[in-house]
Image (tube, rainbow, N blue to C red; front, side, top):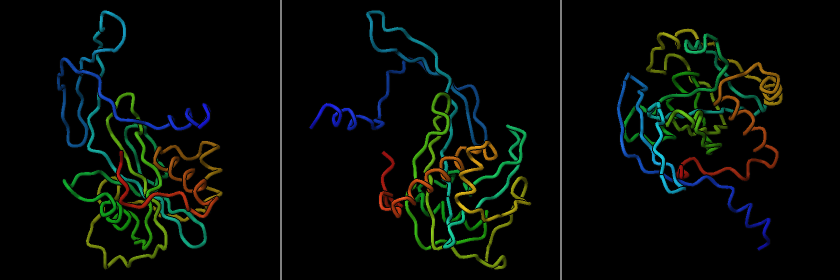
Length: 214
């Protein structure tokens, strides 16, 4: 193996945890919390200890649904923290202990967008903001999509989800809108660009829906 090939093999995120010598929990809310960790920095003789603030989060999933015409399903939802109506892909919190991620993704696609899909793959695993948050997201690619009649969905949308329009956008147009700054949601950006790249070789490089996260 050449030196270049060896370097390419190293381009893979790996688990690692530096020593935490102190921890203070400041807040725990319905979804997120905030703590401060005292972390030992490696290297040097002094082993400096620094404070790192961490937003705790249970994690989430996102769903890029593509129909047979090559269109991606988008929904629009109000996001108070950024003060915007954002175009997004269906997504949801990992708020049911032990629920398989694909089943959660299926539930979110049904409840938020009123659709089911027969074919599922893992599209990407993402840490949306690793500098401050432990949240991790699995983004799925869902194909062979069918609409479910509203009377068959046992779920009532409330609050920000009460009036979410659902649209189908050609994938190429969605890519253009990402690149010109029309779409900002991190899951939508990663999912749209990932689906576009994956389609170039017929989705052959995608992992199965139940692929391990690490």
